[in-house]
Image (cartoon, rainbow, N blue to C red):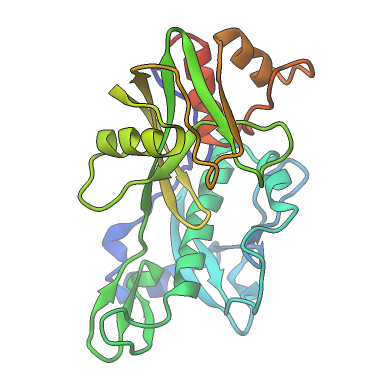
Length: 291
């Protein structure tokens, strides 16, 4: 079945074939219909309907460079790249409230724009020789002035999973999360590791539970800064927990009824569910519905 996931569904032609075409970029920049995304730092600006706010390229700040996000309905859309502010917060206090207001497709556009800008701001120097790099391929790469190496925006794969045993699923929480919120376990995929191996390793490391029969459910781009969340369900050998208290504050096994109560926002629920834009919410709903 298809699983509805936040940060997906953006209607965007990424126009890869134009990224190496200077004339195409010049035409896109010169088009009076071109749109520029309005940002506050890395945060979006929204209208009253939760839609992203766009303006014309005439409003490009003097200290910004335009990155070609792509085309929507034949119209070029750009995002401004400005120098990262010193000590700017990675996530502002208002950001997650705004994410809750945005339709999924709008959030998907924002995810692409934010990840692209954030990558440029953090990769001003070549990892090969240390020289300064410059924008390349209409904003979808950087090129080193010293050794000519090309660098491309990266996505870090992360597995996020529910371990399942005897009709129950494992949820846990980190101490930094809002009070009462629990979610699926998650962790980065390491080099030389498959998705299935990463799921098994992370659940064993964080909860002391051995799992197998890993089943892929869905994926999600997560722009903080730029991960690909890979949601899975795995079968646990037993339900004995040994939590890694450096990673987790608490964890327990839940029933489908408890999951449905949490997803419904029931004040009497055993725990608080992840927000709807997070793939953990979609994964929990998928499992609670018996899929």
